[in-house]
Length: 471
Image (cartoon, rainbow, N blue to C red):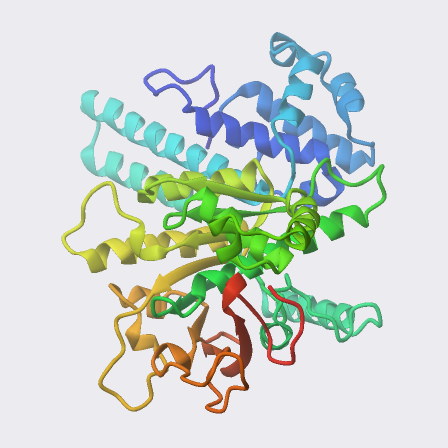
C-alpha cells in the first residue's frame, strides 16, 4: 500500500508533521516496547522512509524472538542495512528517542502514519488509472480495477472491530482492579478538590466537560481550583515513583487562557493558596503575617506542573496548543477558558456555526488523546422565571455546547441574584451568604443533581460545604 521515499516520483515531499509522526511511533517502540509493540496497527510498509520501515521490521522480529529492545540491541540488529547506515545509525536512534518524551500519544501518531500511507496509495491507484487511460486501454476495465484498489485501501483503514467478548473481558478486568483493597473506595480519576463532586464523577476521566455559569458566579474560580488540585495530584504521583524509574518530569495541566492574563491568574492562585485576600495584594496592604503565608504558598505554587498559553485563539491555534500540551509537555488535563472567545480562521456564516466547529474540535481531541478537556462557557442572561438556576438551554451561541459534551456542570450562587443584606459582622440569617451549588446537568454515567459548596469570595475559591480545604 505504501510508497517509500525511493518510489515517490510525482508525489510531494513528505510534510514535516508526517515525518515527525513516523519518528514518534518508532520512539515509542524504543521507549516502551513491551507495551507499545503488541498493540501496533501500523505496518513497516506504511512508512514513507524505507529506513523507518526497516527499523520497525527489526523491532518486530526482535519482539517475536523475545530479544530486549533498546538503543544498543536495535543498532546491532540494523547495522547491516544500508538505508539505516545512511541515516547515521546509532545517532539517529538517539535522535528519535530524544524527540519522543513519552509513549502516551503513540496511537494518535500511528493514525497519522496510516492515514498518510492511505493517501499515497490513493495517489498511486489514480496515477496507474491515468497512465492506462492515456494508453487507450478499455475504460470499463480501468474503472473497475481502480475502484477495486480504492476499496481495498478503504478496508485496510480505520479501527479494527472489537468483539462483545473482548469488551466484557476488559470490563471484568477493570472490576477486579476496582475492587482490589488498594483501589476500593478511592476515586479512579483525577481529583477536583471538591469531595462530593469527586464522588459523583469518580474524579475526572477522559471526557469533554463544560463548566458554565452566569458572569460572576465563580465558574473560572472553580476550574482554577480543579487545575491546582490536579497539578498537585500529578506532582505527588510523580514524586511517589522510584527515582530511577520515573519520567524526567511529572504529568501536567495545560491551560489555554483566552480571557485572563498571567498577572491576574497568578494573583488568584497565590490568594487561594495563601488564604490572603486578593484585595490586600492589589492594594499593597499586606501585613507581616500575610507575607509569611504568601511566601509559603509561593514555594508550593512554583513547583506545580501547570502550563499556560495566552493568545487570541483561532481553531487552528487551539488545535496546535492542545497538541503541544499533550505531545511535548505530557499534559493529562486540558482547560480552555473560554469557548465563546475562540474563532475560526475561515469565517463561517453564523456565530453558532463557529462555536459548533470549536466544540467538535474539542470532542475530537478528547478522543484522540484520551485526556479530560474542560471548557468554560458563558450563559445567556437568566431572567423572567421563578427558578433562576441555569439549564442546558441557557448555554450561549450554539446547541453544540449542549449536545457535544459528555458532562455539563453549572455553577450557581443565589446571592448573585438576591444579595445577602444581613450585617457583614454578624451571622447570615437569610442563608444565602457564601452558599453555592455545582449542578451536574449532564453525564454519561454520572448521577445528575446538585452538589452544595461554600464560596470564599476574598480569595475567589470554592470549598466543600462541610468546610474542607479550599480549591
